[in-house]
Image (tube, rainbow, N blue to C red; front, side, top):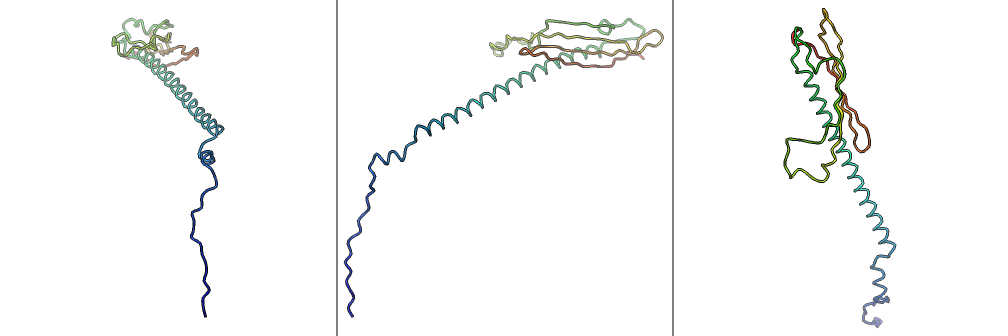
Length: 175
């Protein structure tokens, strides 16, 4: 039996039917896609900048609070460490009443004269008022032996008022 002969043609490479312009259209971005990409990138850039600005505000408020607390602690330390004897007169800082100091600068260091630390932003010093109130609470034989001292620091930053208070109990050195 004889095998039939099959006539085959050589295999040719199939050429794409698209032209070069059609290939370019498939590989490029449309104007709409580029617009959305720019909009999303801009949104994240603006959100990041706003977040950094807010963190900077929080840091400034925290810095001023720390400075106010430092001023209050310094005044309270003066009250607590002043020598006070029952037999002597009451020191001026422990006299009963209220003392207010105003127009104090919170963000200033008179001992720092380094020019490298100054900038255009350090000229906006925050004005502060410190109120010290001393109240007599215990009297023995006509002598007051205990005082309650309250130190309050009031300041305004960015148009918003802030207040910080410390309270301490002070007895005479020789009870």
